[in-house]
Amino acid sequence: MTRLEKLYEGKAKIVYATDDPDVYIQDFKDSATAFDGTKKGTILDKGRMNNNMSARLFRLLEDAGVRTHFLGPDSPTAMRIRRLDMLKVEFVVRNVVAGSLANRIGLPEGTALKKPPLVEYYYKDDALHDPLLCLGHIEELGVVSPDELAEATRMARKINEILQKFFAERNLVLVDFKLEFGRDKAGNIMLGDEISPDTCRLWDAQTQDKLDKDRFRRDLGGVEEAYAEVLRRVLSEGVSAKEGD
Ligand code: UDP
Image (cartoon, rainbow, N blue to C red; front, side):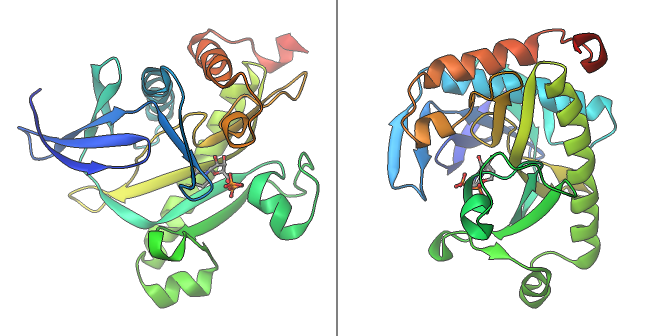
């Protein structure tokens, strides 16, 4: 597949056009940012690790009947994806209190949510610093229709069920994660973006060690090692949660 012009360069990925107007290439970078882009750094080999992890997890979701933009591998750091018209709303799914939720409602990090998962919506708007949206805000903005919002929320909950089980079989707790959805040519809602330790909080089920981007955000050290460990577990067979008990 031939790469044509660069369409978009973000904090962690570059998207290229190809000779097929319905197919893009998404190339993962080693660069990392946090705190609204104010903290910058490099996580060595992150591009390759996140590409491989996302590919495995998109396949898992497709096999379970969740439509995603994933089409196949392109290079060690890149995948072929379906062209989508991305929704201007990001979805955060939470099982355990952490990060901005701990700051917003004052419960300690690690508190299990009473009725998981909690699904939150954020406005994709750099100038506004991606604020939390309530349902009335989304209706007022009109950027996502009520049907699209209901469909993407249903998908987000299903994705959580699938990923939670998959990670549990690999001794990882899926604390929270961010999803981005888009519309294909026919208007179907599909999962886009990536699924990786950049976008998910993952804790070791035994030790509660953080194995995600919080190691970078909070200067905990062992960042590359944590990403490599998550990749190793994601690519492993896994042990069913019952057998592991
Ligand atoms: N997240 C993300 N991109 C964002 C904001 C959040 O991938 O721009 C992910 C983050 O890695 C975490 C989850 O969404 O897994 C919830 O993030 P939170 O709202 O707690 O924000 P944070 O405190 O991480 O900035």
